[in-house]
Amino acid sequence: MTVRPDSQIFIRPPRPSDEKQYLMGVRASRGLHHPWVPLVASPAAFRKRLESARSPRNASFFIFRRDSEALVGVVDLTEIVRGVFLSAYLGYFAFEPHAGRGMMREGLARVVGHAFESMGLHRLEANIQPGNAASIGLVRALGFTREGYSKRYLRVGRDWKDHERWAILAEDWRE
Image (cartoon, rainbow, N blue to C red; front, side, top):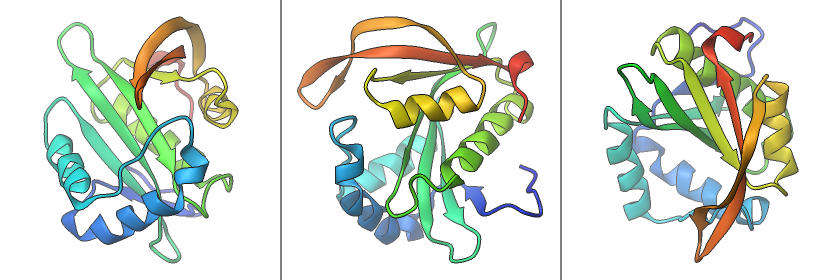
């Protein structure tokens, strides 16, 4: 992934040494993510994240501040399908106190560019609960378009939640 000289962040896959910072970020950010996603702060959940990131069907990226190496957020590509589909689902979340400062936007843009340019994917889809204005604003700012509405699409906690489908194609991507 190319890095702009004025970049506030850097990105890399998660490592075992990130566990403490990740767990602290999850704990500090529960209010930010409620009710959209229940993040789990446990060593077992972190190990599961590392294992999942090693699967050919998934890719995970941690976003760090360049100046302090503080963990800003996470971007996941899941259910990567090759062949004629070349598609993946996109998930992401920021950690306090970094939310709303433009670093997630830069990090997400880098991952989207990497998915298209280096991984050879053609389509990325993000499914977002309708009331999550910050998340919708982020994908909209990156050029994703709303493709539809899926009733009771994903189970969040114990409840099935409606989601909007947002997607972008490689040929529409302009960082």
